[in-house]
Image (cartoon, rainbow, N blue to C red; front, top):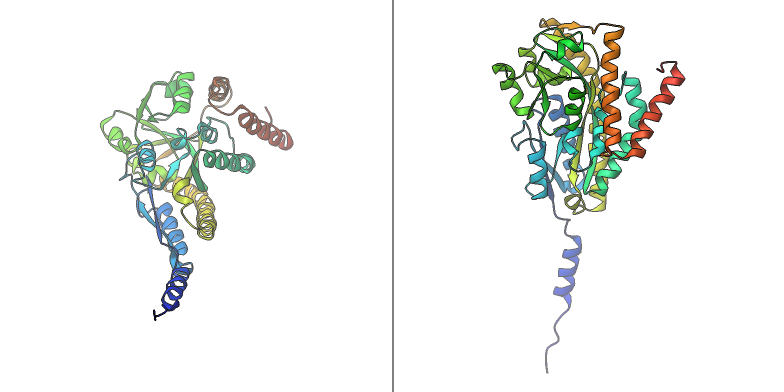
Length: 339
């Protein structure tokens, strides 16, 4: 008589398999932000919160300070699956979707109130377009307004035309804007800017007050021109394939926690830029105002010309571009600030 095998071991195995926790995932993200900055402190706090959720299935490993290279290099490493994502400047993702450049159009915004109005539409549209191209947006944070900073006072376009202005490598907006204004430019990676300021290769940068301090550029400049030139953002993205390997519940947790981190960072950055500007003044950096009247009009005309050139060039989604300009026109008309 053949002994009947008990089904009990199989049942136990099935139960254990079903009860086993989902595999843990580590998301490797790179950023240019130096360690110890507010940005990195907040990102690490968000990572700790995600890891503290039930079973801690998702962890983050950060590579700060540009150790993984510039934005272009980080994108290449994401595509090669050496990284899962990163924190980028808006322009750093133009290879994925050129529309991210709309944030930083020169002289597009005149105040942070205008920024808040436009971002209600633009953040959603940019996130949707990036995800359609394989990048999941975890959040978009305000970097702040970039200002001209130099070793000499820059009150007119003529003043700037005599300077050597740094622009990020592969940045068509900055290149177009400076060319329209007749300003010489020196394209460099962000990691090379400090050395270039030391050697005199460049003598002028466009940066937020907080960034100028974080990257130590403020030690090489003496003047800041009080005219918002462009609006800068930070965007944290994860490769869609890597993100979709997380369970639906884990995806929701990561989106919720890191989205809140980026919103909080935006608010902090706004305050930090105010404090950084005060710190720059205290360290002897003089804030100068552009000459009013015709000279100020020349600045704005150069910005308008850049916007129209880029719009006509067709590199950016016309409908979104026009919607952004329409939002601004409506806001200015409602506040009596048109023209």
